[in-house]
Image (tube, rainbow, N blue to C red; front, side, top):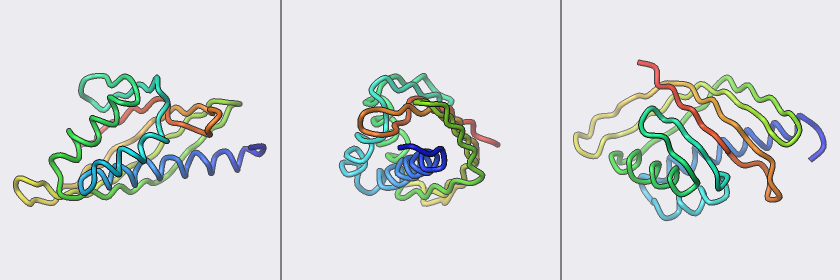
Length: 137
């Protein structure tokens, strides 16, 4: 990849694949796991407001069990992206709006917050290296 715009678009598409995999995880965790395999770096570090998540397997397990396990369906919507590319690393900030239906109660909930992500360019393309999610009450 040469231009900053093309790299920023690749990063935005990567984050969109993250959201699509997260949404799929409630209905088909196996397929979501396959998608997540091409999204995170092996040394991923995440902060979702619970215990720190370290490694690609930890984040995949968290998204496919703790998050999706309690939901019949989810739909992530990202807004207001700010992506800054600096060589083989990048940062991205997003406003996120999620609707989900709880398995236990059938209630439809809304989660809003912000993602602050770190990305790294690998031989296989851009991957998510860090995520910090801040839920707004």
